[in-house]
Image (cartoon, rainbow, N blue to C red; front, top):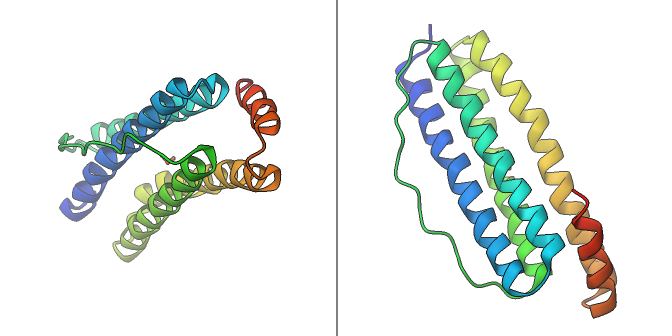
Length: 161
Ligand code: FEO
């Protein structure tokens, strides 16, 4: 049996996942405008993953016989200060999402809600990957230190995602 408290948190997380998609799409649009098509592609793929995360939570609520409630999503930032600032922001955002997932896991454990714990374990693992992906790009950008030729090469690499 899933509690109303957990249903509320899952619905709020569905919103957070769509908000993440929106943030990454805005970053993708920024990269498009900056003619960094590889980074734009990477961010678009990231946004698609976020929609999948939201849908997985929605399927879970359906399976538990609970109501999905779509909440209002916030307008994302439009302007950024270069690729390093964007990926640092993405990493910070993923750390925020991780904290939210951990809070949900705390509740699932407190409520002895084993089904939610099982689902959330998938998200805990996914967040390790999400943070690592963003962190790796931040480190590469810090390493090349704003050199145009290196950013050009990194952009080509990120187009492979
Ligand atoms: Fe759905 Fe990037 O966390």
